[in-house]
Length: 480
Image 1 (cartoon, rainbow, N blue to C red):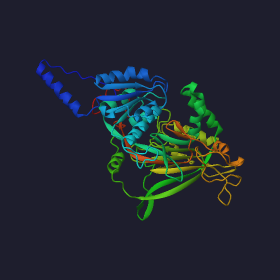
Image 2: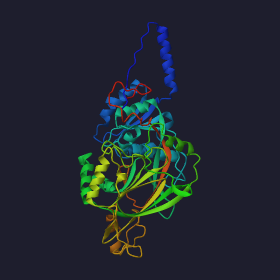
Image 3: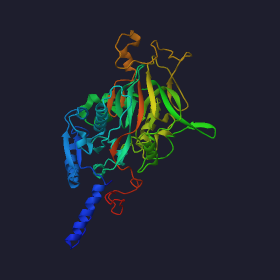
């Protein structure tokens, strides 16, 4: 956690004091700190304390640092996105755009910023040839329920730490993944996400929780408990683009998601990815298809660690290396689900240690849901349960086709056994940074450091330093 400290210098000669002031002012100007910020505040997110937190912590610190704030308090969902894409605000007048809220508020901000950049360049926002990188940096002041993004960016959800990172003006790239509708025609861009895209359990929880918005953040605990005890699995086919390299005449996976390297301050992997983003290296890419029945399919852009899950999905996922971690949790027994829950909440255990969890590091993957009728299953050595297929490779008891299941845009008109309504009951929905995507069949691509974020990175000493220890000072003297 970072804290503001005061250093008082005394000198009787006014001339010397004036020289000190001029020198310190010049040093601050050379640091290229932001002077004008556009700030969106979501008063309804999380515990609905965003405005009180802004008044108590953010406003005094920005005033102390002489940062001018243009504050916009949102009144509805997607208002940030609408304002950013309406071109009513000249972004050139600001040194950055900041949001005060949760992960959903942050998702609105960078989606609006990237789409605004495409609009300014005259690109087709539904089928862009590529995703342009915005020049305006963004930041987040955590005021949500879990604040996963802020936790991964700064190593803490402490609001003062995030504000000080914004004031100091240091920026680093953050990977953003894009989600496309998987059709035979040219894929259509649906959404961008920064944390995780999840199908199955987390998608069901988010969809179910919309019925209990009156409960506030506790609606996720209630809906999660209901879905957890139900233990439902979903069948699907996942095509993963895995990069390989040849070592000693043997082809091995180029990026190991279990290499034990965490993303910390001055991360060499992210620095190398930033240098190579303009000149990508050609490598041997192999398509790996994984089929079966899954409790969850997660495309994690970051580790997704938070106070409830200190290790997240994978503690070795990096913020700016140009890859996402695909975490597949096989549908298994209720006992194994408890093991998964305990591993997710542990400070030392990782879910990758469980035999029914698979992790792949990739730049691109696609998913197609499968409708399976009259479920019959068989177990595996790892505890997973898959659908039993007949010798022809199709589901033995299903009278409906197991080809690509139509997305939400397909109209009804099928037979009773394969009706769209019945199919949708057998398919889950995607949770995309807290929002529901109705399309089941999608393509996901990771875009290396698509946006710049106000952050310094997680210090190696952050995990070992004790809070408020006066003997612990970092290089700049303002953080501990």
